[in-house]
Structure formats: structure tokens, C-alpha cells
Length: 383
Image (cartoon, rainbow, N blue to C red; front, side, top):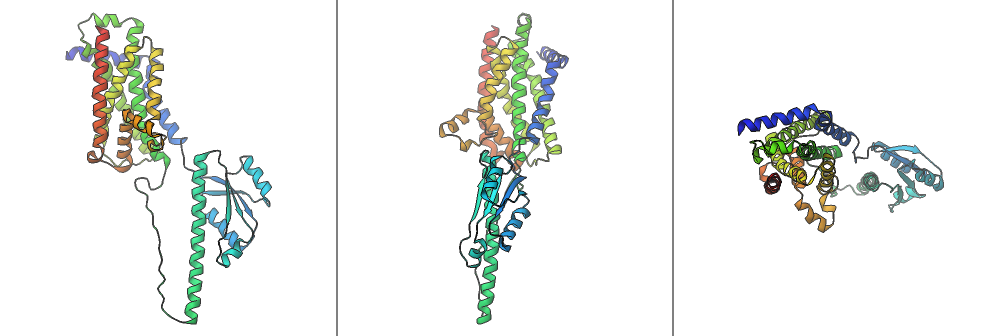
């Protein structure tokens, strides 16, 4: 049995590396996918175009403008004199945000009244608008806190000048700290998910196509009349692409660390152990696709039909908690969700088995069930 299995594995490697299309599918898609998500898929808003409408023209309004520019998140592109010109810039897409300082801004501050600053946002991209709203609100709040602090010190000095007493003024200060991703870089969130997608896409597609190729070129009947057992054929067809999946995983992890400086705080051994659990699911799904496909084109199309729901319901791009309740329950039937939580936990949090064991248990159950049922169906088709 050992000799027959080794020969099948050698045959698969020779066929995979001999055909140009298979060589392309083995190594180029992982690198392309990593570069796309690493460089282009970025939800961080680092450079926003700001239009400043100052209808007060006072030192206080200019201090607020300096606060916006000093934050490093807003780039001043125009200083129109009226609202109509600012609206044209916003409509033309030349501005992301318009800050309108209303008349009486400095007067209200000096008298201790509520000073209003109007902020207009380009909401065509809801994510960018939401982030910029938070940035602008934070800048205005910091400026307001600075003004209140200066006014409080001035009043305290005036009170002490009239009646020199030691008065303790209570102050409340909130300090926030971001764990796991202190710089709030979306790249650190997306790149670990690329590892999951690569393992799923490579092993799922190549396993299905490798078996269907035997049917398409007419060599499956020859394999069936040889002394090779069905289990040997299944292992010989799946193990090579499991090894390819591990090689692509190493390639992507190293590239993520070197090119994008994504932190990895967990255990490498635990990552590959959980990857082997996930491979049982993808290899089993590939076997199932091979039983319902007659040509490689059908196998590829069916693979995409499997891949898209798994991808969208995994939480890779859209948090599961933001989905409808019924869809959230549906995601528990998606093994990709469990492996994605494991990979992100290992990369960003450095989680261990004590934290990740529910996801590992779910992967084990899905892997054993899917691989067993697919192998039984494949064995029945051979019979």
C-alpha cells in the first residue's frame, strides 16, 4: 500500500508541475491575492481633502483650523468665501469634508456659550464618511477641551487674586488604549484573512480539478482496473495539494511579516495544526465537487459557487455581528468562519488553545464529517 500511495503522489506532482496552467494555479494566485489585499484593500482614511469656510475670521477660528491641520488627517484644498462655492467643490468630488465656522464663533467662546461648527460630509462612501466624522468630532472635542481648560485656569487665577485660597479643582480625564492593533491599521485585519482564503481556494479547486481531469482525459477507468484501492487513490489525489496548501501558507505568512509588517503573536505550530484541521474540510469539499463534475470547467465553476458563500459568510470583510440574526446563525455552518477567527486570534492577539478550543472543535467536527461523507460518495462512484 505504501509503495502504491507514493507512486500516486509522485504522479500528481509530475502532472501538476508539468502543466503550465496548474503551475500558475499553485503559486501565482496566492501572491497576487496577498498583494491586492495588502496594498489596495485599505479602509484607513489617511489623506482627506478639506474645504474651510471661515465666516468668523477671528484668532479662535484660526486656532481651530490649526488643530485640524495639525491632526495630520486633513489636507486643506480650498478656502472659499461662501457656502455656494463650498457646495460646488463637494458636489464635484474635490472635497471630502467641509468645515463651516459660523459667525459669532469667538464671541460665544468668550462668553461661555455653546459655539457651533458646521461639518458637511461627502456620504457617497459611507465608511469614509463615518471615519471622517469621527476624526472631525475628535478634533473639535479636543479643541473644546483645550478652551475649557484655559478658561478654567483663568477663572481660578482671578478668584485666587481676589481671595488667595488654595482651592482644589476636580478634573476628570479619560485615557483610552487600543489592544491587539494599536495603530488601527486595517491591513493588520485583512492580511491574516488572506491566509484562510488561499488555503481554501488552492486546495478546494486543485483537488476537484485533479480528480476530474482523470475523468476528462479517460484515465479514471484505467486507475479503476489497477490494484489501487479507493482509499489509496483518495489519499494520493489529496495529499499533494495539502502539501501545496501548506507551502502557500508559509509563503503568504512570510510575505505578510516582511512586506506588510503584520504582527504575529501566536504559535506557528498551532497555526499549522489548525490549518491541517481546516484542510480536512476543503479537501473533503473538493472530493465532493469531483463527484458531481464531469469536466474541469464544471469543477471550476462549482468551486466558485462554494467559495463565494463561504467567503461572504466568514466575516473576512464584513463583521458577522452586523449581519441579520438569521444569517448570523447560518454562519455557524461555515467552517471558514472558525478558521478565520483562529488565524486572526493567532496573528493579532497571540491566543492559545485555552481560547481557541471552541473554534478548533468546530473545525474538527466539520472536517471529519465532510471528509468522511465525500470519501464515501467518491468510493461509491468508483464502485
